Image 1 (cartoon, helix red, strand yellow):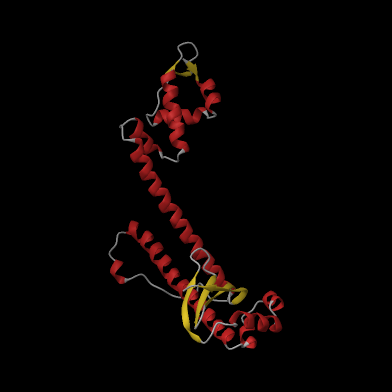
Image 2: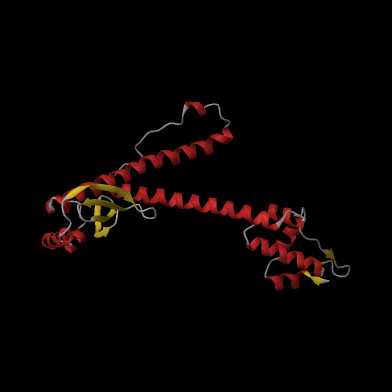
Length: 252
């Protein structure tokens, strides 16, 4: 039999943690007749090691009970937990995406709190314990709609700037530049770069797709189709201003 203090030192846990596992029925101890202190067998310690391993895998107590006491296959439990964590991570990425869009909208001076919205009257009969989740869900959808409109503004700006590049209209194009961008790409540098870019391109045919980078939605691409080549323009936005501008040849 091994004393509780030695068990705690061996596994780096507290006596309170051990008592918690006992309360949940995951492990048992025996009290020493001499000292009245908790003691554990080697079998108890093997069970404890299993518990700590499963906890390190982020399994909640309920699922550990299902594995150790109810005999539920560990692989089934781990695969279910994997899906839960993936869903949680996806949710966090979505939260980050919305926050980034909101920050960009605020930098443009847009009023994030001034739009009034109301839940549908169809949900009026929902029980109170469900309304909070519903309101949060609808608020997220509402915010997503507002911010997606902000993304559409980026696309319109990207296409307009591509048009200014085609027309060699630096004055209008530069109104969208940040101060650093204007210093980096003055008119004479822009004119020279544009001439090199379009040399041998042939006649302009049409605008291609305008799309946002899936991982960084402040980065927009505009494709231009010419007679002999296709050109893709990359815009990096912060708020309403362009902080980066690159050109590259693409195949489609």
